[in-house]
Length: 628
Image (cartoon, rainbow, N blue to C red; front, side, top):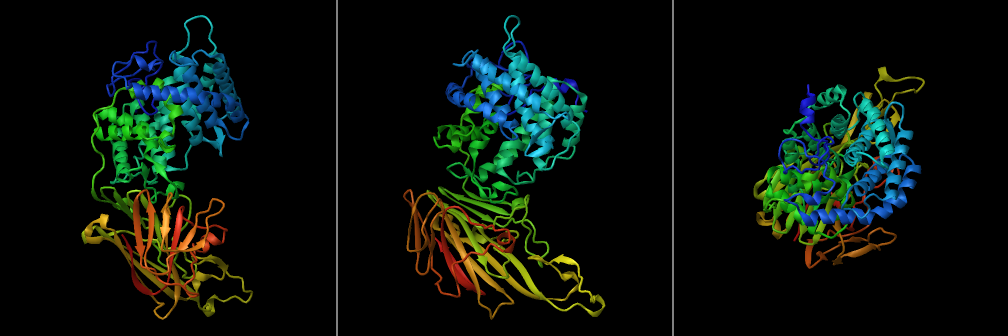
């Protein structure tokens, strides 16, 4: 069991070090053992990273008027509790710090007090909140973690006499945390990362309001083992949830409980994020099992994790990442700036100067077997080859499409400097089974990779005599594409088969020279004429040459083009990707991408973002798409 002494020797968690409330604001050197008290004036530490701390303060001060203006609307909104807790933390951090232009501002104290009272009033009797999900322990944990940091600041700033404008807020937050702690010590979860978020919330709560039940529950969750694979990916394979939940939660548990071994898990994940990162900070997410599998994620989302680990371990690679992120001016790089000030007060070790930076980019090829993914880098050229779709164990059925599964059909991305080919997909119109999705990567010579898919559809014979019913009432069964009251599982099936193999081959083993993408499609349709489309999508602003416009850009939807013959070129920022040759056109090879009946039945689609170019053909056949 985690002893109370072990817990007190840690800190309240979040992204870095902070102890249970103490009287003095004495900084502790980064990475040293023992508690680091909240520092209401982080500018006093001798090893201060002044530009970083000033940036955090200025961002928080700039955001304060908007927070003040909007917090009441948050309180009155639907399921507002995470937003309200975050707003209260932001305002309290400015109110309590003598360095802030809003120090002791009565408007901020009133807002924090009102927010705390609203949270207490709306909390269920069982200690939970409704946050989309109802009576939800895991979503309550997100609220709790901000409230633990808020209470840490409120206690640290409590006066020893005289006026105490935040007393009511302190009492309300304490009551909320006491009730929430009981709920989290008994409640359940429904995603892998929730286990670590709940554990972190309990660990932080326990430093403020000790209870053996908190520690017992943390032990139960940790006893399941951290869901990290040999590549450093968590089971959800999601950069979003790694940066937003799992990594900060494990770092919090490490600080609060003395489980410093958990830092090694975080290090492994941060390392794999660097393998997946592009020069502009984008992080590959095609492998994700969560909703970010079709979204851009950014290294900036992990800024404080890279900073903390750089300081704890003296890792110059992480220091270089932080410096690059702070030097950027785009919106993604400034994600969370308004929250940094509160973190520096609660976790003062983050204000220390970073170690000497060293390069973090490495040329070469890295295979991540657990994700079915390979990353290639050579200078400013990178590529992702992907074949990690979940499912496929039953070749008689299309792969399942559901929340929590990796289903993105993009199998190749290629960057040449500023020219970004963000997606290559293949979609044959074979019984509306949808896109090609490879299962497993086979490494070949010269950093090439092969992946394949075998998919079947069929027609069903009459039921055998012993299975026939005069009333025609048969079991409602599914056959992969659709359901019907036909007892499919009792019928003989005449199969049609489509077998697709794709080889992605760097030219001469050097991705700077481009790729040859070799398609081989066969099966039972040798004498058939199955329409198929290769779909390319290009990211960002750029110009296309050599293509025919099928659909002009409108209402936020990007343009759609077709390459009929010859070569096309995408130019962006002085760089280019050439692609071809075209594969013709005609009524038997229409420029239509079929996402499959599982999407169209629900009125959905599966369109990648960016400017799209279609190459149409018919299968079975062999051909090569060249990228240069």
